[in-house]
Length: 402
Image 1 (spheres, rainbow, N blue to C red):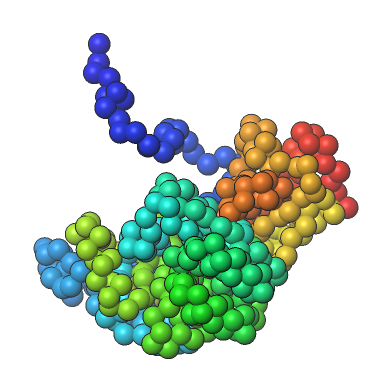
Image 2 (image 1 turned 120 degrees about the vertical axis):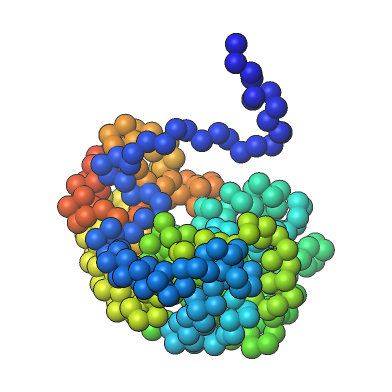
C-alpha cells in the first residue's frame, strides 16, 4: 500500500485543483490574448541579439546586477510610463516581478495581515479576491458606475469606517480599462480618489495591467503621477496583455522604503532573466507599433462580441461597451444565477467566468458574468455566444434574441 501523503497536508489549504484539460471549443475565460498577434518573430530576433551580446551574464543570479531586475528593462518601463501614462519615474523605483500576480502577493505581503480591512472595486479581479480571502482580510466593495469608483459613495464609506474605528490598509483600483468592466476613470475622479486617500490616511494600490490596451479616448495620467512625492500610491503593471501572458513579466513602481520591504519578501532569487532580456531588447524598438496593431485587433473582436451578445441575448443581457482590454462584463435580470449555469454550459463546451468570483459581494455578482474575447476568433465568438444564449434559455428560461 502506498504511503498516504494527504495525511500530512497542513490545515487551511485551498481546494485542490482538477487535472489539467485542454480548453473547450468555446473558451471565454482567463486573460489569454490573440495568438496571431504574439510578436514571436520579433522576440526571436531579440533573443538572438541579446544572447549574443550578453549571454554570459546568465551564469550569475540577477545577471550579475541588483535584485530589482534587468536594468535595460527597468529603464524601458520608466520610458514607457513617462511617454504613455504621464508618469515619469526612476529605475530605482521599479521592481520587476514574475507577472502581476507576484506583484499582488508582494504588496499584500508588505501591508496586510489577518483581520485587516481592504477596499476593492465592487467588480474586480478575481485573483485579488481569492488572495485576500486566503489572507483572512475583510474585503469591502466600493460602488462603481460607468466611470469607475463613485467617489461620493466611497467618501461615505470611509467616513463610516472611521467612525467605527477602522482604517482600510488600501484601496485597490484598476482605473484604466477596469477588469472586468472595461471602464476608464476620468482625471477629475482620480484626483478626488487621491484626496480621499490622503484625508483618511489610506494607501491606493493602482493596478494598470490593461492600460496599454486602451483604444477609446486619451489615456489619463496615473493616480500615482498625480500624487507627486506624497507616497500614497503603489503602482503595478504587466506585459502579459500587451506582449504575451506566458512571458510572466510584471513590475511594481513604489518608493524605496516600500520596495526595500518587498525585496525582503521576494525570495525567488530573481524573476526569469531571459524573459527580461528578450523583452527589453524587443520593446525598446517595437513596443508602440506592436501595441497599436494589437489594440486594433482587439477592438474588432470586442465589436464582434458585443454584436453577438446583442443578436443572441437581445435585451436579456446588458453591458457598458468596454473602452479597451479583452473582457465584456454582462448583467442579467434578478433571479439569474450565472454560477449555476456554468456546469450546463461546460457540458456543451462553453466556458465563462461567473460574476460571483469577480465581485466583492458574491450575491451582487451572481447575476453577472465575464467573457474574454482576446483569444477566440470572430467566428468562434459568434458561434459561442449563440450557444451560450441557448444554454441560458433552456436552463434558466431566459428570453433571448432580439
